[in-house]
Image (cartoon, rainbow, N blue to C red; front, side, top):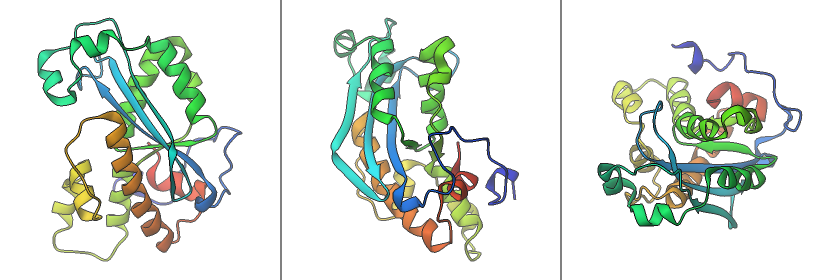
Length: 220
């Protein structure tokens, strides 16, 4: 088993705002998704951010964040087919610095959750430049949490297939979450929030009950 799947692996020291002893039902989350100009982490830029708040397993439908971002670069035509943000839409977006300032306010005091969230966090921190340390919230990857659940559940013959099927659509099917191919940051954040509800229930049944234990399981 790879070290990062192991329940007992060491995690980094937490920001003082977050206590490892906090029960999962009391942890405040911000489920985040982004749309980017491409998946090339060296050159991609931020186009939109969607986020939805959760208190424990409860989705706070009235607490949402969404903005289109204008990074001031060309938007590749092939990416428009995916995220549906046309150059004209992007031109009307807000500056990355303003978008990140508003996002940081929305996620203050919350643990960030996302599907392959390390991609989102890297893109967000890149936009922050020298101030990337300002986005220091702990982050949980739903794909990583799901893989830990598989690794620590009774063995199944299709384990290898299950381990490989970790797209958002794939996990939505496994956990019976309605999914429509959106590639819209807020809609995908909502799907991820519903998936996170299911994962939290499963993790709790497997004796993962505190933020500290959760970070050992799914920290990005």
